[in-house]
Amino acid sequence: MSNQALPNNKTNNETNITQVIAYFKTLQDKICQEIAAADGSGTFIEDNWQRKEGGGGRTRVMTNGTVIEQGGVNFSVVSGDKLPPSATAHRPELAGRTWQACGVSLVIHPKNPHMPTAHANVRFFVAEKEGETPVWWFGGGFDLTPFYPKDEDVQHWHQTAFDLCQPFGDNVYNDHKKWCDEYFYLKHRDETRGVGGLFFDDLNHWDFDTCFDYVKAVGQGFIDAYVPIMLRRKDDTYGEQERQFQLYRRGRYVEFNLVFDRGTLFGLQSGGRTESILMSMPPLARWEYNYQPEAASAEAKLADYLSPKDWLNVLKK
Image 1 (cartoon, helix red, strand yellow):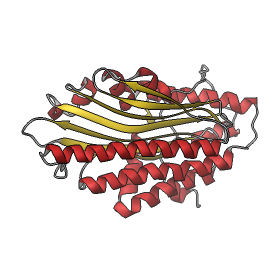
Image 2 (cartoon, rainbow, N blue to C red):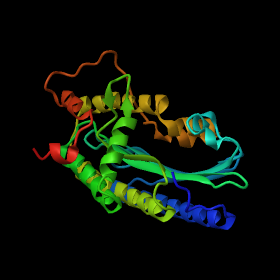
Image 3 (cartoon, rainbow, N blue to C red):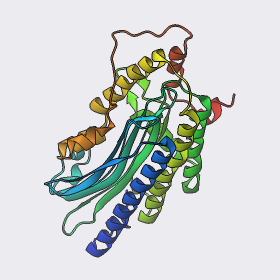
Image 4 (cartoon, rainbow, N blue to C red):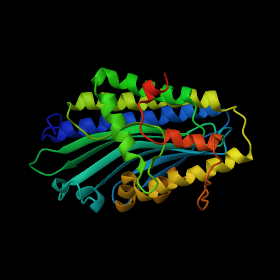
C-alpha cells in the first residue's frame, strides 16, 4: 500500500484531512436534502454531539415520514491516542499511533415493504507517529436490502455502481462488488444481507486525489442509485402479510449489524456515541422460530436473491 500522497508533512496532512471533512459535511447535507424531498413530508432532526476523547459529529434522523419509517444520516470526526483492539488486531502497525477518522454513514428503513432498505458509508482514516509516514486509507460503499425484490430496481442499483466505477478502472466494479458480497454475508444463515452493491476498505493504492475522487463518486452514486427507487416504490400497495414479512426480514439486518459489522464494533470500542452508532437498527423488527414461507409465494422468491450473482447480466436473460 502506498502513502506517498500524505508525506511526513504536518501542513499537507492537515490540508488533506480538512478537505475530506468539508466534503463529508457537504455530502451529509445533500443526501438529507434528496431523501427528504423524495419522502415528501419527513424532516431530519439534528443532534450535535461531542466525544470527550476527541471529536464529535452531527446525527440526523427522520422518523415517521411519508415513506421512511426511520432513516439516519450521520457525520462524525473522531480522534484518539490509542486505537481499540478491533483496529489493531488486523493492523498491528497502527499500535502506538494517534489517529483520526471521519465519515458519513446512513441507513434508510422504509415503511413500504416494496421499498428496499438502503445503507451507505464513506470514511477516511489516518494514523500518525512522529518521524514516520502517516498510514491512511479510504473506505465505504453502498448496499441494498430488498424484501420483495424488483428486477428493475436491482439492475438500476448495480448499473449505477458499475458506471461510477468505470472511470477508475475496468476491474473496480467487479472487485468491489465481490468484496460487498463477501462482507455483507450472514454466515450463520448462509445468505447475503441483500443484493449487494459496492464495498471497499484500505483504499490507498492510488494517489490521494484519485482515492478521494472515487469516494466522491460513491457518495453521489448512492443518491443516483437510491432516490429513483424511492420514487418508483413509494406508492406501491401492500398489506399486513407483507408488513409482517418485512419486520421478520429486518431481524436479519439486526443480526448482521450486531454480530459481524466492523464499523459497529469499532464505534462502540472507540467510545463513539452509542445512539448514533445504533441508529442503523430498524425501529421495529421481529423473529419467528423456524419460519418457512409458503412455496412459490412472493416471500419465498426472496431466497433467489440472497446469493451473489452477476446482476447486470443475469436479469437480462
